[in-house]
Image (cartoon, rainbow, N blue to C red; front, top):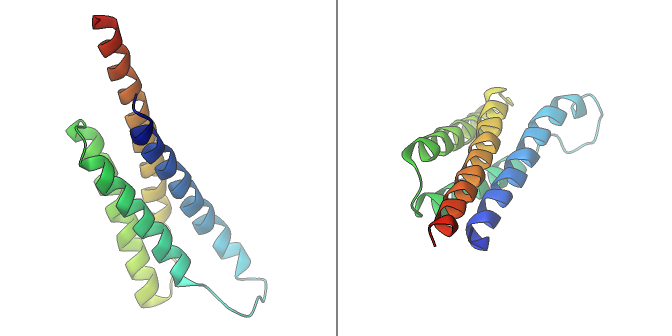
Length: 123
């Protein structure tokens, strides 16, 4: 398995996990008066990071089912982020997109490992 492809999936898992943690913890932090409120730049950064990683992965040869899962998931995250920015309301389905990204990247890692194993067994 090429290291670059593996690193993209690992970065995608990390980014989606950070997004899910951020979305889960944020509602509890609103009870603590921190003074700054909700910073939409964090949401936007995580969503754009995820988009960039999914875009890079989709440029490689991948099964369409994995790509569909990744693109639908990042679409949910981006839609949730835009709605959050426009309405100042942190919607819950962004977490669903994050978990979809985590699962999609894990499936892609497993697929690349299996594909690499087949390639080496043919030699």
